[in-house]
Length: 226
Image (tube, rainbow, N blue to C red; front, side, top):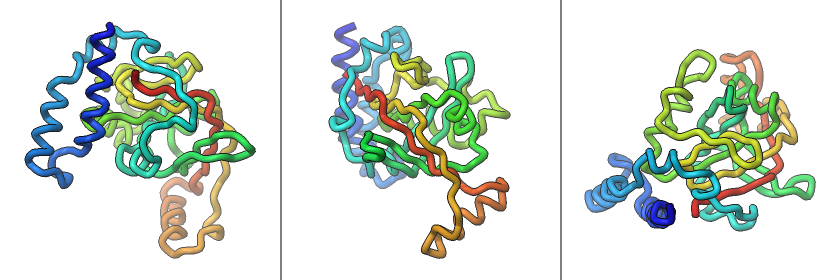
């Protein structure tokens, strides 16, 4: 198992250095290096067989690696809520983290009809996970299909796991931030001061009948790959 974990460390560094997929501005050399890194990834069966503690270590919110702008807007956030019996994931490209109520918190703005948001409100514990580029094809379908009317969670190649804190995440993640739901606030178009932002929430309201929700969660645990 030590060999698996050492390999995971090496691959995490390689993926950060060579992040990006073919056709997204990579040079031929970068594409080749990304392909080579993917080829040396541990077998999925090995990852699935490893325990949570063998794969991840606990860190503080202040020790979160990387910058929030790249993690959220480039890697994208996989938000997962629910229980081992019923959970759902979605992909978000907006949000971040900071301090609110003197606590470390995360925030995101979600459409009101998200199935994951429904489960977040039911269970209050949820995770925000980030992955190396090689796993992008595995998690992007979470943002295309709704869990209400698809079997996307059953069909994914990612390995679901319950964290020690009770949330649901995936063993392939490089970073997992676990949160306890603090607040869900409905936005108002009158609060937006630019035509672009106001138009966005108004257009979304026309589709769902509700305005976006601002979601705040207290950071209760953070894990990164060993």
